[in-house]
Image 1 (tube, rainbow, N blue to C red):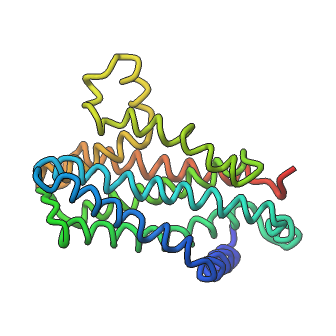
Image 2 (image 1 turned 45 degrees about the horizontal axis):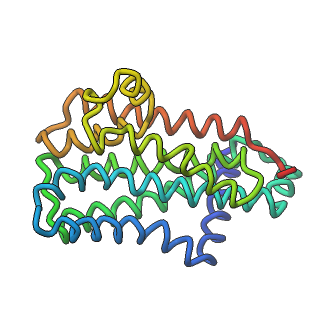
Image 3 (image 1 turned 30 degrees about the vertical axis):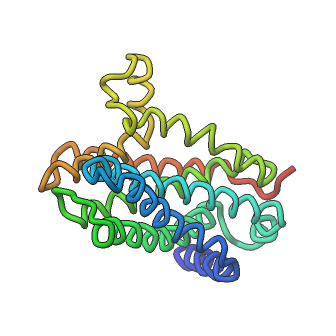
Length: 245
């Protein structure tokens, strides 16, 4: 990998995104709108909002970044941009790292907006530090970015990229512990949930909700989420193709 090439790729992706305000709005505003909607859904039950809001604060950025990243990367391939880039002295690692860096910058803004809105405008009550909540939200957004980069290699069209949402995201959403504690699930489903990264994203948020300081379980959860994000980026680099057949 070359630092200059990685930074140049990230700068190019960010310049392209500035010409697509709808994509930026999707990434930055949708999580804020959804968490606000959730607050008013539970307007008469603030305790319920506190119990679910923290978990969804991690899920919303993951889902939106997965969708946007997978489609944006696929568009680069189908338009021939990646094929032209590969004629230059640039490697797959440089490209994936550049994409990840560009979307990570947007993910940081997205996570900060959603967290600030939930805590200071919607009165989400958490026991732990807001900075820990922001850390988990950022890692979740990065995980969504990594998963989006990885699955984009297996889609031949934007429609197929969207179809990966129910295949990759929805099972994790059902098994992450949002609807029922994972230890109360059928043993087979609990075993599956133990290997899904979204489960640890939700667990990390719940740790901040209940504990003042960073616990050992919290550190385990954030390390697993970060490790899954790095694994997704590595798999994305290994499966990156020049063009879509």
